[in-house]
Image (cartoon, rainbow, N blue to C red):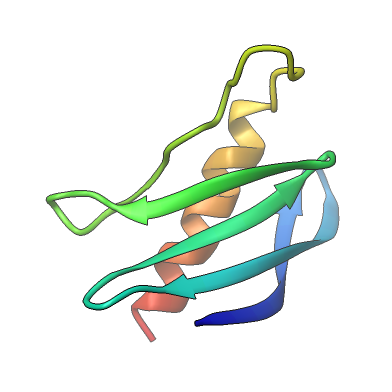
Length: 81
């Protein structure tokens, strides 16, 4: 099942509104967030912290690690509510 959303992220004195989707599976879920036209996949690791799975893929420009860290922080904050 998919749920679409917009994710507000503070990045370099700007508030970005990133498009995303939540995909649920039997007992887990993943977040997919579009950054600069590329979809990043986020999921929880063994310690229940979010991680990005495909941050730097071949043929795509590198996404600023600070932006990825901000996305991770927002996802973590939303999950703790």
